[in-house]
Amino acid sequence: MKRSSFVFRLAASAVALAAGLPLAASAQQVINLTVASSHPTTIPWVGFIPQVFMPEVDKRLAAGGKYKVQWKEAFGGQLYKANATLTSVEQGITDIGWVFSYLEPAKMPISQLSVHTPFVTSDTRIVLGAMNELIDKNPAFRNEWDKYNLVFLGATGSDTYDIYTKFPVKSIDDLKGRKISAPGILGQWLRGVGATPVDGALTTFYTDIQTGVSDGVVSLATGILPTKIYEVAPYITKVNMGVVFSGGLAINKDTWAKLPPEVQTAMREAGAEYSRRHGEDLVQRHQSAMDRMVEVGKTQNPPVTVTAMSESDRRKWIDQLPPLSQEWVKNNEARGVQARALLAQYIAAVKARGAKPERDWER
Image: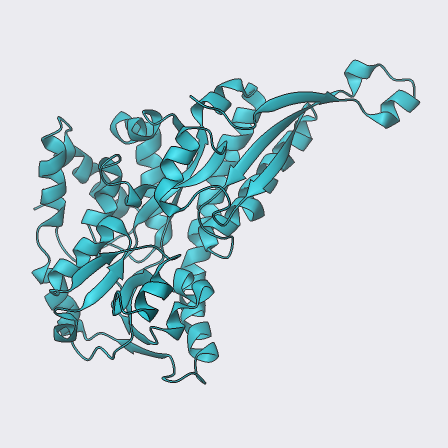
């Protein structure tokens, strides 16, 4: 596999030399690593890479005193776009990066499980905890990362999904026949209301809505706020469709193999902390993002408004969805995967953490 910037160099401490101490007592191995993403650091799960993951690695290595990482940052699409997050880490275009797994349904079909089970929970911590456990302990989940030359470091997810449109939504009937943007396979959630999904990502939604490619978007408050999509889609309809596992922080396996065990341990621990704090942050950030959009959008025309979808319409949406989980099971079993067992393990894992699914996806 192609590798990007992994090099080792030795740096001796000038203070130690001046004091006449043996060089071996103060030598520190400096490891150069590139860390990158397709999205900007204003997006919460990307921002937490430089804000949490990298400092946590640095802190652990500083305590050991033997190694130091020299980070080369390339966030915000400097090296690759949203459609190349997997291949860019796989091929070593970056050493470490956020992999947007649900834009990879063909390559990572097992990782799409949470997308096929909407309306399960709005608590990000529950989904991330379940997925981190399954990837750590279940070979079927883990191998989907391993086979693309990736070492998984920590799960990322979304806050709960809602509808953002350029027209008011008074009932789910208003969505029928409309073109609604959605990231990748998530567009299948629109099958419950008869809308037409338009593939896209947070980096493309604004322009798509502005130019009429779509009439709105299925998305999350923490992504809509920093990208200012509320400017072109000011009508927010709170549907609370639930949280999904969106991907994870990963490192190129060739790079990983070159790292000393102490550095590998630091990265695994930092990845777990990154995922934990990311989940906690999204739980708090969702409502504040909603409130902020209303505040900054009150003077635009039309102003930003938030309306909760009625419980009867929500129930209708849930009931009208096709059997998404069973479609996932069938497609994966055709590939020789024991998918029904994986579905049961996932549902058990989220329920064990307090989730109360609004539809029985195991049936």
